[in-house]
Amino acid sequence: MLQYKEILKTVLPDYMPLKAAAHDIQTEDNYLARSNQDVAELAKAGVLPHRVFADTRSMDEAQIQSALGKCRFVAGSMEDVRLINRVALEKGREQSLTAVGLYLVPEGHDSRHGIREADLPRLAPELKQLSAISVQGCFVEDCTEGLYGKDLGRYFRTCYESAKRMTVILPCSMPYLCITGALGAVARNLREQPETVSEVRRAAEIVAMQNRTAFYAKLLVT
Image (cartoon, rainbow, N blue to C red; front, top):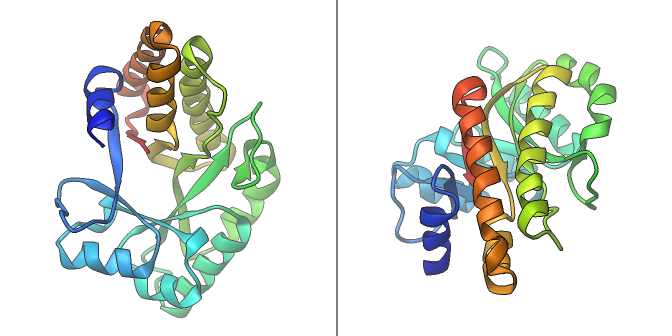
């Protein structure tokens, strides 16, 4: 964790870490919740729902039901999106839409998990019909393996451009963009190719500058 703090300070100063729920909970931090217990602990500690991102891939229907209204959900499949919509409808939350982010696999990359960017045009009509949810934000699936220096920097730009395209295709808002695996990827770059880290830093800075002038998303990393 100490190394990650140094990375955030020296390489990714414009990005905020997404923390795991732990005993030392700070209400101004952002958290990744993997269970309803995590959501409940964060809510009890006074963390506001917009700072809690609940990964529905590790939650069942009862947990989603209990977490409703206490977090932002992030779904890794259309099945999860449909489930959240159904639970929200049953809870009578149609008048107050439930925010759902998507785990996104960007163009040119592959992952066993998440929703492929190439599938968004096909999924858009169904997403519009789900009356109890509102798609807001995305987590880009970790596709950083084997990327260093210029290639890792390009990946930051790819994540940003994919999120921008998502807002147009669906359409949807983008209050946050989380680049998952970014901290581990930069740490690996520092260990194995320290001379190329400046290229990652520069690319991440460019993304942050573009975001400040046009997009205004909260930039998160894990």
